[in-house]
Length: 46
Image 1 (cartoon, rainbow, N blue to C red):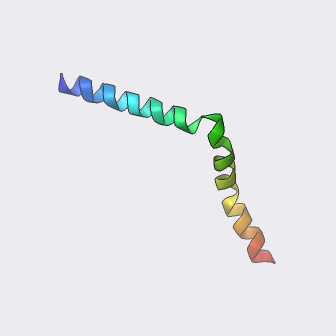
Image 2: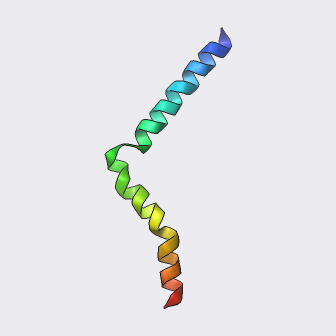
Image 3: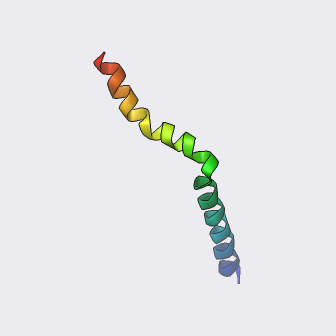
């Protein structure tokens, strides 16, 4: 019984995190974070 409840809660948390990450409003933030390593490289070359 308890393991079923824990599994259900974890599934809901996973789906909520997935929905948060794939929400269109987060795209700009994730794109900026993906460019961070490349931006550091360009600044060091100057």
